[in-house]
Image 1 (cartoon, rainbow, N blue to C red):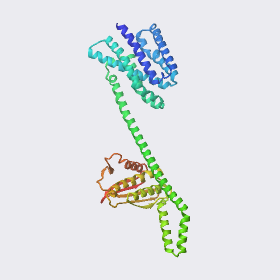
Image 2: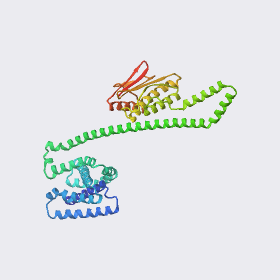
Image 3: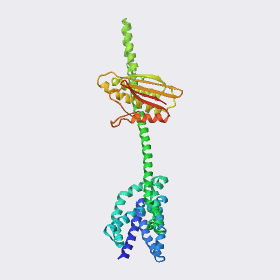
Image 4: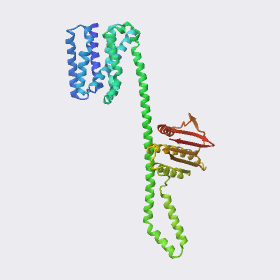
Length: 423
């Protein structure tokens, strides 16, 4: 009974590991691949049987990687054309075989059984465990096969360490059974290193994700401003087209006024038309096109909300700060100021946003001042908000200022919120 259970368990673990390895490799996606794989699974046991007839069990256990894992890796390589991932798949499947062994050892420890019970428990849980791994784990692991070789090696590091540790401490030596502390504590040490490595990797990914979000927000702001500016230009063009269309009627009216000696009425009519045309043009604040477009758009938004915005300063056409970063700085600063003043405007109170900027020796100075009604909460000199979606603009401003080695200041004085930047 013991020999039969051990033999069946060996066959079961071989099938368990082979199928799992093939699934991790995605080597069973076509009918041809499945036929080749199962034909190989029939030949490998024949190779094992021939080896069993020549050598004893202990020696066979030592060369098990050569008579089982190496042929399986060659089969998977032939089916997928991915040598590295075939090796990693086998190592990962070997690590998953530990699940069968541990559950069986747990049952033996609880029920005070022996080797026969361990083999039987491993046999019983083989199919359910294989189904769960194929259903939930295998699809995730298969996706890693398309990653760069460096990422694949990082993923296969833990399975490779366990594979080497298992053979060195249990098969080729008796270090594990000797109870040496350095051996017993090796895998917990590996788990600790893997955990710390995961933390560092996760932190790096989160930082990269944050940078990508800032870039996306910057592009979104630029797109929004571009759309607003295009709409303003389109309205101005439409107004010009209407004036060109109505030019004949205007001239006829002016001619009639002059003929009737009503020069004052004609002059008033001309002044009215000039004012209407002046209102439709895009205001120009400086020579820098990016800053000019943003300022023009926000001044227009402020006027619609009943908010006065005073702009003073000048920027040359080309400055050290890139257009995308300048767009983020101005847009976030003015957006925050406009948002703070909308409460005053809605209550019918007058409010003014003062914007000052200039460039000196290649450095940019910007100051935005606006009234603030609610108390502003600061953390480490930076204003923070508990409202969802707020605070991202301030973070973007600080990130860009640090990028250029500049300085920023946020403060509240006499009910006025003041932002100063120098970079």
